Length: 189
Image (cartoon, one colour):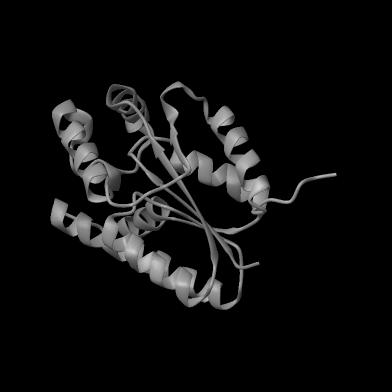
């Protein structure tokens, strides 16, 4: 099954929750950058923001390396991360090399809504995701999200969802319909 689903978008937009739901439905191999980064941080550690960023880049490298192994085996894949433009270019090359059918899901939302969701998660978030201090400063959070959006502004994602007024379940059900229509999911009898 040479299909890949890529979930990307704003911080606190529900990418991981959606990835878990889609993975349970599809059985695709699922690689999530945050989980890889957390494992690296627990094993290697970090003492400053620059070291944390290096671990973040290595997490992406590991995701791509394992994805390429899976593509070589023609396995269904699900990737979830806050991809940057250069990473999307790299991913596109892999998709073309292995002739995978791709489906991109882009999540976004109103900044105040995303910030509230972000703050609500702080007590349970891994320390590796709090190194920028975005939970302490709305203006820093705002600049980070705007900068991330600006970085991928030249990419077009036909399946973009504003999560501001959607529950995780309603988002999943809407995307599930589209994935079924696009033959990424089989209709159940």
